[in-house]
Image 1: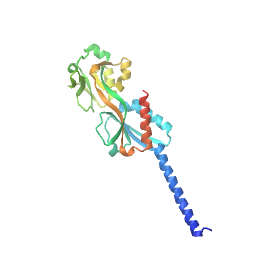
Image 2: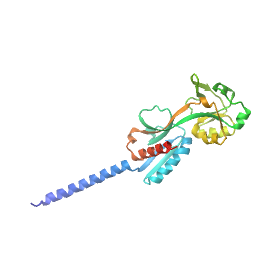
Image 3: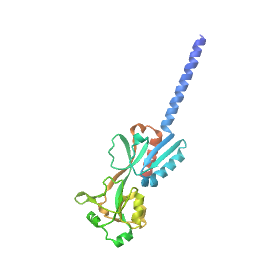
Image 4: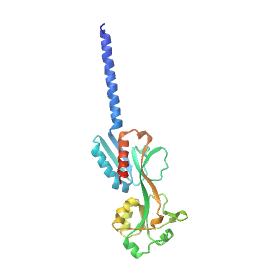
Length: 240
């Protein structure tokens, strides 16, 4: 038996189709396993500067086929509308349409400089804050109210001050300069407390801020560029 010319031509074309399909499947598989393309992400300014930028630098070193657009801003971006692949969020999450991976915990601390406390008495209860100059965060969910965990449950105290800023590092600098008390996430002021530039107050009553999360839309779940970066963040924080 011998294949006809028509049969040989048909076989040759089918083989080309199968080869193209196999190449396409391999390309898609590689995209799902090896990070490539552009990763757009957003993170809070202070947390991003301390932790996320270092992770991004390592990520770019390991994966040369990836580019990263990192937006550091103390605002809550809409990931879908603004086209972000990933966001770092701090607090208690409410958006159930997103996938969230917990990275670590964060707590609030009230701090002031040694010079401030030398001139003013150290507050012993949250009610004492009424006699103090407080430094205010513009994006605080509770406005000018600071929340505490009291012996009888949560309590809220309204504070006042002459300085309002939309960035935690700027508030920490103002506190170091003796301008007042600030309530900030512990990761912002940990080094300043350790080095004696800031002193804690109301330590036993400062509340948890919730978790630090990597958050991304459900349709990014199978993207290697997102999945691998989130896994890298999880490994980084699990070792701290």
